[in-house]
Image 1 (cartoon, rainbow, N blue to C red):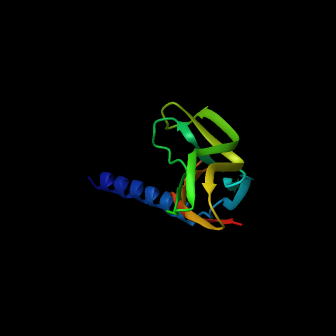
Image 2 (cartoon, rainbow, N blue to C red):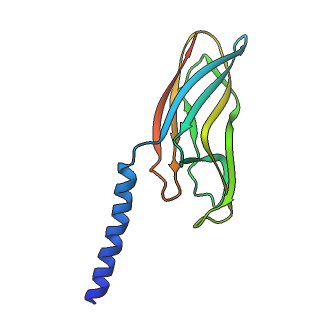
Image 3 (cartoon, one colour):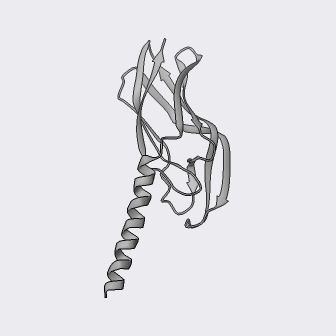
Length: 153
């Protein structure tokens, strides 16, 4: 009975130490935001992501078993902004089978752009929040929220 209790304590310590390590790991992302005028009131809102080497972010359509946390982009309500379509991604993608995940998954690494088409009437700021999760070959960091601002000139 004592050895079972010791085994449970040991497993709990391993689990907690992994969570603590993930919390202590510095965020390997660098985000910048660009509003690119296409024509008239038509813009591309571009979320630029630069990931440190060895890290990846799940694709917007990752496949797999459905447990991957994909990036999401939520714009604050703004009567000057009308979204057109959904966010697209551009970057180096990899589709592969990963241990512990059912089916093949797709992720991106390096420099990635997420692009949202929008009609924007007038100058000002377009704000919102994005949520993302990044992983390396050993662990995934907890999902993170980041505020963003696009300056419309």
